[in-house]
Length: 415
Image (cartoon, rainbow, N blue to C red):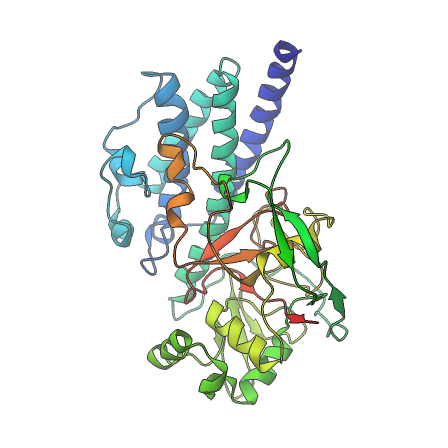
């Protein structure tokens, strides 16, 4: 049976490989070489680097390890496009990726084509464990597609002309959603984490039991209109609402609104990859830090959900539903309902290993485990998350002050 199943899996992987790899190129299709080279801040990376790094991943962990000599564009490129894999050797400093004017965008695209041809020619001969690495590489590239969109938005926001990457999609203005309904969550012992068949990142398991106290979760995300009320009531100026580190951050950075909001005589606007437009109060708030999410929750007389509460509530929801990334084009949060899409939900949980967690052996074991320190978990995906990438067990993680990602919040409360 296994010998019959493997060619089927390889065929499916080739089809999926082509689809995922094409989307990365489509996202970058409107970019000039200059657009693709700029690095707006140390946390972000140039689009050109994302295109090359996601190709280097396949070269380093699939081709080089299992088909030595099959492909090596330029061994110096491993230094340029390795991200954080210490076991893969030295690498170019992350804050200086924007200095890589060479190789050009066209050279990187050519590099990708060569990698694609080599991987596709090798797929049928790869043993099952290496097919698993190809699957990991595709999910890794989907993560970088969202990162590219985050980083491109940060890049274009630095330009005083506020240029649009894409023309805005014709959409009807989002109306104000109904008042929040509170959904009773499960209580007692529940299971969370991934188990069984299908892909999952190592940090999503093992599945284990947690104890939940009686609680309720909001049936939708917090909206721009609700955030405006927080601003107008002095939420950013009230130290009693903020964690100590958050208050220090607000004062140091003079934060007074979500990232990409701009206030003016005619009201608030928000900047996106389809340009600047008037703030829609009915859309979910986005690009907020953990500190802001926590302060808003306290102001609203609520709190952030734990990741166990969130996963337990979303376990039976359709992870492919909601506003997620289907194709290159305008990316904006547009609806506040549902468990998946629009904006990642900040949780009150620190990003830590689950009981029994063991990183994978070798270099790929550096993928998640070594980042389990000082970061907070987000759940549910966003409008920039490729559809098909998410599961109820999916865990994202960022530092509390970061907010260039598509991050929002859903409230919870104790019962």
